[in-house]
Length: 356
Length: 235
Image 1: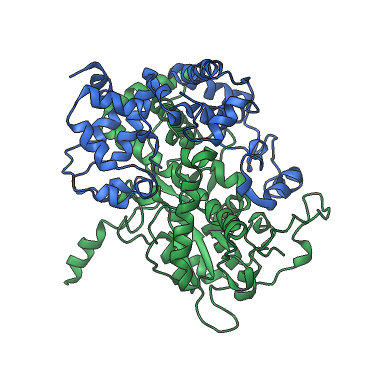
Image 2: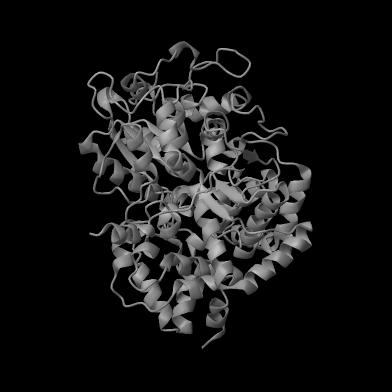
């Protein structure tokens, strides 16, 4: 293939990611279950990359979960998102950074609707003004937080203390990456690598020396299923999806699962616990699970951040096997120390899955 | 064309979701819900393109439209640009708006979602808040979650020191002004009315089934809707 032709062919898989001056919106799920991940993202951008990132106390949920469980009306969701854009406009920013894949898909869906149906955008502007007397500008650049980590993966890799390499064997760690359905399945052109060659996590993992596993169910949903998960009677849908994925990746002996979406992180982490309790199966060595980390957690760990300062003790699947393989210098004695400096009692142990 | 179809067509997700289905079944092949339930997104798209009022009414009253997990894998793979997942959103919306959702058990489960997610949004500004996620409702949360909830201030404040108080960090308390704006948006766009309708409908259904019902989630009707699919005693 000619070089020019190659460039044209791959152009549709490229994504414009702003260099600096970011307005950041948090994720409902991430801040509840892996709150250290968002704090790590903020620290990495500000302290390690020297970027301007604005965190706004006034933004709310985008209502994404409520929308996809059919509860929150489209008009409502659009107006709430318009309010987030208004807050960004008022703060003097144009580059919108989203910490949640469900939100990212929804923002893109709404921008797509407004582009094709300007009358709907006008109606939403009216709703917003009547509700809040606010007005908004559409962001010039809208990305998922992992897009920024991907963009600056070279700079991050150059500063790392640890690599995704097994310190005992010198071989690359075997890594499962899961980008989350709403990152690129809905609007492939909005994701790095699109739906066919998603590279946002794979490129980042490779830059840290890890090797990405290509397993049969790699692109299957984690199983959130929105209402299927929240209603206990249909929760088996969610567990079954994750179980299918775990069985599919198991023969490749992953050392680590890295996720893009906070929901996916939660399901890979917690369903491994349920599978261990109900089926007596674990997927790591010696009754350990496969640690499940978000991209920010992996970046921060590699940069030398303390694992307990990152909140890795909030994962049900213990991360210690990964820390050992990476050669991370950590203190097991401070894992359960709280904000006041008090030593907290340890969580109860699962029957099978190891916790340290 | 009947009135239900006219209303469905007013939903932008219908026009965006349906071009022309060629019945290839690619969506069904890729669909996680189709592999676990008696569900076929191809059938939904095909049923809608015939524009039959009776068929549409059957969908709105039935169980099938509630099986989709909203992964949207169907959008990526459809060779004709259809998105059954979007059609499902439009169908579920119309089913709720017309009250036809009360004909199906899974439709009635909207009450559970209103209690778990809707009330959380309007009380905290988040779809999910740790203080409302109880391991007796979500046992898969595991022992680590019991530990986190037991020590919530000690743990969450490690990250931004803003747990349930003003600040910029995780689980910060969202200001009264922002919450008022959020609630006003819900009022003006009709979502508050929807929440009330779901709650009122649930009260009537509970009465019909002679089940205990109150404002909390700790009542017999919630437990039935939350933990059972198609119970025998529900007609």
